Length: 89
Image (cartoon, rainbow, N blue to C red; front, side, top):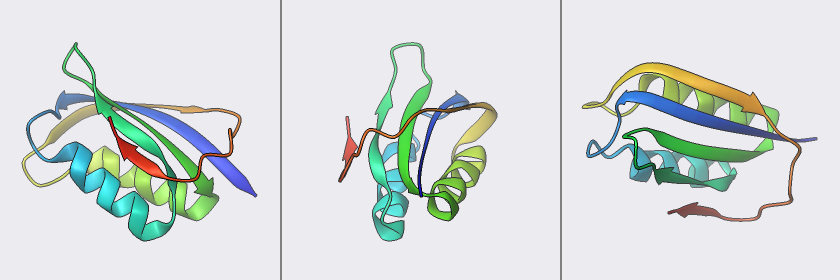
């Protein structure tokens, strides 16, 4: 069954390889979606795939890459859209 979650990471999450490390991890797990920097300094991502892969990515985003400092992570379930690839926006 396909699961979809949208996250929004707050804290020191831009300029710390957050988007690229998220994309690499998503592709390695076969999870589709996208990740982008937002003008307010947050990072938003959508993950769509099997529940275990999506949950692993949500947990990865709670920590962020080495130089990131995630202060809090918003997580919302959404209906799947049938995404096939993972993009950095």
